[in-house]
Image 1 (tube, rainbow, N blue to C red):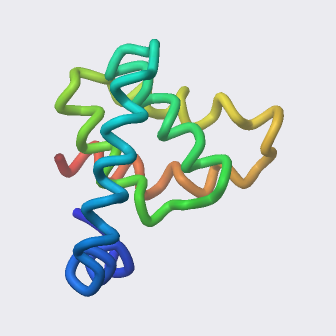
Image 2 (image 1 turned 180 degrees about the vertical axis):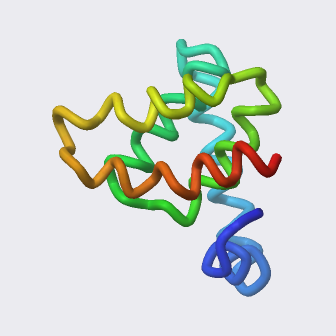
Length: 101
């Protein structure tokens, strides 16, 4: 489950998409965070930036890593003090994705 915009990016700009994927892989490899923590932090950033189109994909990945529904909620809301109410916009699509996965 990816957004239409990302799907177009992958199909219409495959060289750029490949370079983007390689950069993401390189960043993951140098991170000192484990995969689970990194994925939860990424969800927090998506929520803080109101990038809800990517939330369902990442929530399904988190569920596969064994992350609980409550942890997903907490990851989204951790940015509430700094980012404000905007983070709550990610809750509906996150929970729908978690419950449907």
